Length: 253
Image (tube, rainbow, N blue to C red; front, side, top):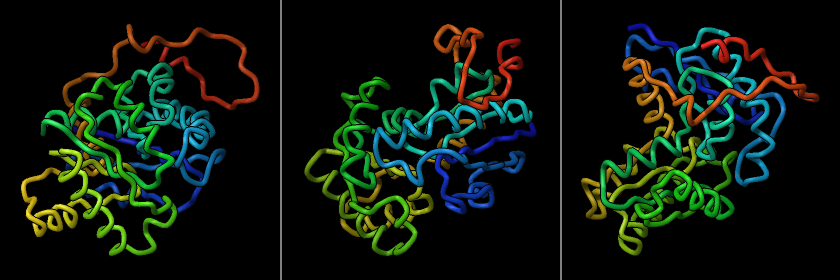
C-alpha cells in the first residue's frame, strides 16, 4: 500500500531536518516529505518556544491534508500543535513524545527520557502525566547541549547520552531510554553499544522520529486515525491574524 507521510519540523531553522534524512526509516512503499514553519522559534527548548511554534505547525498539518498526505509526524518532542492539529484534520497526526512514551511502556517496566536542557524537564514530566504514563516515568535527564548545537560534536553528544542513560538506569531504575529531542536522530545504535560496553546490553533505546514514522505507517495500513469524540472539529468562526488553510476537507469527513 502506497503511503505519503509528511514530517512537520516546527522551527524556522532551515536545513535542520530533511526528507532525505527521514526516508531511510520508512518502508519501501512510503514516501516522506518534510516542511518547516516560517513563523516561530529557531528551536524548541521551553513551553514559551512551543507556544510560538503552534500556529504555523497547525497550518502545516492542515496543508498536508489538503495535499493528499496520509499522515503527519511532528518533528519535536514537545508535540507542538498535535492536539489542535488533530481537531483540524482527519488524517493521523503523530507526536513523537506521546508515541514513544507509550511504546516505551510496552517495552519495559519504567523508562527515562534524556533530553537537551534542564528547561525541558518540567515539560516532559508534565507530558507523562497528560499521556497517562507518569507511573512508568523513572526520570527525565538532560545532556545540557542546546538543540542547535547537537550536530556540532556528535562524539560529545553520544558520550553525554550514554552517561545520562547509565545514570538513569543505575540511579533512577530505568529499563528503557527515550531520546528527548528529535535532533538526536541516528544516535540510538551508538548509545545502545555504549550501554552494552558499560554492562547494560538489552536496554531499548528509542529514537523518536523513526518510531513515530513507523507508527504513522501502521495507522495508515490499519485505516485508523484519532477519535472524533476526543478531537472534535472546531466550529467555524471568525479568526483574525492567522493565514490558515480551509478546514472544509477535515469537517466533511
